[in-house]
Every structure is written in C-alpha cells, then in structure tokens.
Length: 303
Image (cartoon, rainbow, N blue to C red):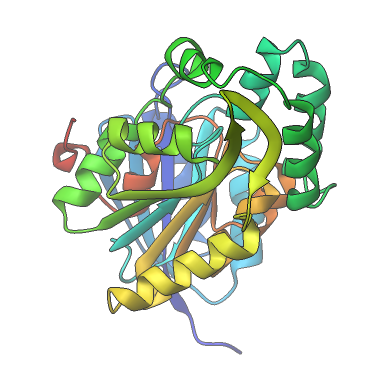
C-alpha cells in the first residue's frame, strides 16, 4: 500500500456569485473526515478562499467526494501536493487569459469576417486544428487590412481580465519573474504586458507592408512547442526547477507548458486543457492563481 502524502485542497469562490459558506465548510469536514488524516482548515480570504491541509494515500475517493460536494456550485477547487507552492516564474497566455478577447477575432470583425475567423480560432483552441495551420489560415483572410486598425482594436476592444494586475503585481513583489507568451501578435502583447506589468512578452509578428497587412506571419511562428521551450529556457536561465514555475492559459496551444509547469492552470479553459491542468479556474478572477499558491488576501498587492 502506498504511503500517505501531504496535500492541500484549495477552495475559491467568486464573491459576486456566491461566497463560501460555513455550511459548506461543515459539510466538507464531515465528508472528508473518513477519507483523510490530520485535516486542518485555514482561511486565505474571508468567505472567498480557504485551504485544507490533509494526508491521504488515495486521491480518487477524495476527488469523487469533492465533485459531489461542489456539483452545481460556483466554486473553483484544486488538489495540489503540499510543499513549495509559491512560484518564482509565471508564464501566461494572453488572449482569453490576461485579456477577455481573442485579438485576431476582433481584427476580423473590422473586416466583416469575425464569424469565419472565430470558428477557426475556437477549433484550434479545442485542439481540433493544429495551431500553425489555424494561424496561417486566419491571418491570410486579413490580407489588405489597414494596419492602422490594429491600434483601433486595441483601444476600443481589448479589456484586461479581472485580477490580472493584482496577480502580476503580487508575484513580482514576492520576487517572481513574469512573462507573457502568446500565439497572438507582438502589437498587442507589448501593450498588454506593459499595461498589466509583466517583465516581458513574446508573440508572433504580423506582416505589414505599405500600411496594410500582408496576410502572412513573419517566421518563425510561436506555437505550443515554442511556449514549452520558453518555459524551460527561462526557468533554466534563472536557475529554477520546473517545480518552481506556474503556467496559465485556456487553449490547446497552452497545454504543453501547462503540463510541464509546477502548477499548470486552465483559466476559463477548453476541456482538453482542463484535463491536463493541475487546476481549472472557471468562476473566480485571476487572483485565484495567488490563492492556489497559498497567498492570503492580505498579502495581495493592488496595482
């Protein structure tokens, strides 16, 4: 029989939907009592986030019990190994992760092609199309677009995801490095990275000639393998083990780096990403990534 290991169960609520109630915690204690040893509950944010430290030699019954307890409730949760949870490197996707939109879909809207382009985007994010193929097809449809529309899209359409600034400001204040790595475009990542406070950014470059989009992406194309390689190389450059890293994204293009990171998070992610991630956040804002690391709300740095 395998030896029992130490785990931490993190529960996170979106207070605007439904705070964590005392009744839920009482029910949780009753249900887990027969499944775990040495249970200890600690609040990270009043009625917003708590964590349960416990020891068990079998996770499957615990996962089943938690699914039953939380079914139909607007709470996020994760089961992580106890240990070094506060990470020293965060690598994040941009579109639909740090911002609410998919930039290429918003560009396509100005060309009257949003429905067609968004359908390709969605298929790629679900893993039904290879990212490179999907990107080349979508950018080709934008050939001839006035490049000045890029600035208009950024100013009129792009919204930061709630909690983004606090997440990055807090991790940087605690000594972590932060990098925005996107299969999107440098025009947007440079601006979003600066607005949120990331240390740097990497993305693809749109071809532009004579003030118009050429319909091509300047090679090389940054794809899922590039994101994984970036995680590995940046961690090595700072003398970090992958266990000391966190990666977050929503689409299949993010899955390799999410699976490789010390904590991989699917934020509003597609099902294929949730299956490979350590945690799936569907209800709370991006400060949930701080709670997953064991930070208390009193430690958050508001940017």
